[in-house]
Image (cartoon, rainbow, N blue to C red; front, top):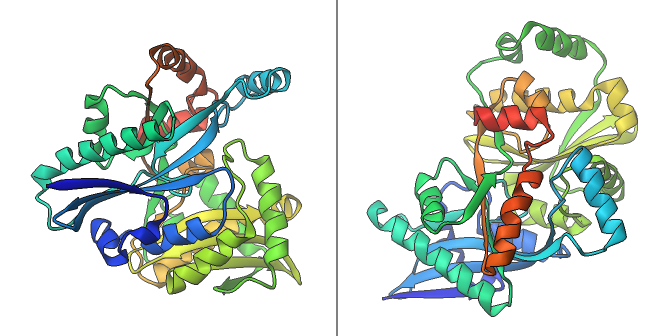
Length: 374
């Protein structure tokens, strides 16, 4: 017999049992506990679990929040939404229950390695049913799946079979490391991109420092982060300083902060996760004025590629933003789909129209190209 339970803390679930459902994931039990302890405002965490004879056989992360329908809009539509919000505060805000995490690039739904893969679709259905029941108990009508990965066709099929509405999510960029030197990597790129990157490498670069403790520079990091967040059209949340502390502390050797110094001034930082196969770029923040002079994004990119080569890593996973540049830098893209449904038919019909305007590829040609490739 299967028992379905929802918890408000991941500490209610055994660490090894959870990780057994998510083998080889860097965003594992320790990562989500770090996120939970960071005290990120505006989100309440939920952890969904299926037990069979007291053994955890399937699990998923979820969250609740008040979601702004204009959060991922860009261009003219974003200006219109911002004007509407000034005229009628709260008009575009809706309570949301979502499977997935705002702190991850895909919706993780895991099953124990002991489970026959043929049983997995039924377990995924039960996870979705549990999410709907949990949302109903919280009085939330809008249920969503944030970033269902195209690498999980069973999960996509379950969402489609439940007649959830869908639209493209933000794709994830990856750079497979199939070259032995940075120069060999540059040789795989287009002529103009290769020329620009080699020009950058010839110039004097910032000093690079890898850290696992950043308390002494955290105030400056937060200034860089806030300035970067304000510039971003896709910033959905504001991270507190404790997020960086908790991730670096709880993930031990699997997390690092890469600092970029010009003289004695910290001008950029990059939070990364790593294991024996890949490097995951979680967040890059920088001083815009210094970026123009030192090309900090490119410096960081090449430093990460070089790190992967030096340490024998086969994959550089580089997030969901800056797709135009990442296309030029040789990335491939993995598609994500957002699914949603409101239990109120009238509101669900309204969302069917609204999604035509909030698709992330509507006003961003680079995003459209990345989604098309994915």
